[in-house]
Picture 1 (cartoon, rainbow, N blue to C red):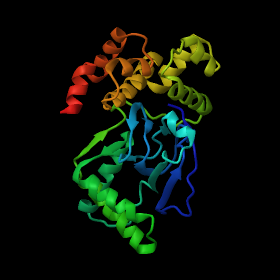
Picture 2: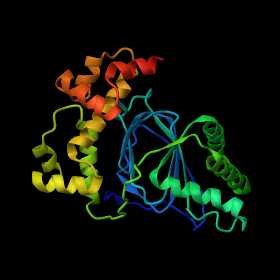
Picture 3: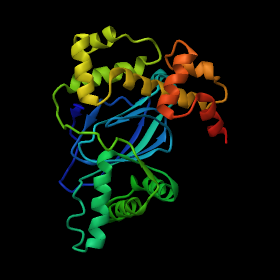
Picture 4: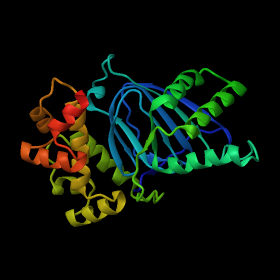
Length: 288
């Protein structure tokens, strides 16, 4: 993956930065930076890519990402209409991966934090008891200053280090190349796919978006994402279909066609390949 390296505003090496997001539409480029990032989505939903993980995100998501882990959060197209009823709100905390170095010499203090940062290299999505406590603290953190802010941040980290209720996002085989080359090209390709996955996209069309021949595009895409173009596109589509199937107003056929498939046979095949269950089983599980 060769995303864009972006700078995060920092007034010092050990600064803990809190950013409140309140906008109509999340549209940052596919990027990485040198800081760890903790993101709590308060409102909005859409598509998220972290490393080689493609998933939907929704209000309430809490994700920790290590430094140099490429990521992008982008709202579904309805947010681009800029209606007052659709807002993207989030609390984001940036912090250096070695912030704990001078906290203590005790292994029992340092080691759990080191392990958390190591696991965050793949991205972690939290849930459960620790999640509830952390989000409550994050809702207060942006209003704090000075020592109170630092103490609250340390409480957040302590809760996360002891939580076992999380899931990894990027796969264990994901290789973060940390390379700025081709950043603009891969970002343009991702943006195009997230906005157009619901319709037929030919290899020739997506190759043209990347300004490459089909052969060169396939080689480029696989080497940068560790997925074939077809695999990536199907994961994006099936992820969207899963979200639609959680809404009882959408039939399985609706989810099929609105996710970019032309027939139910193909939809069912890829749905089971990716989720390991068919659409009916998935919907029944959700209802239960």
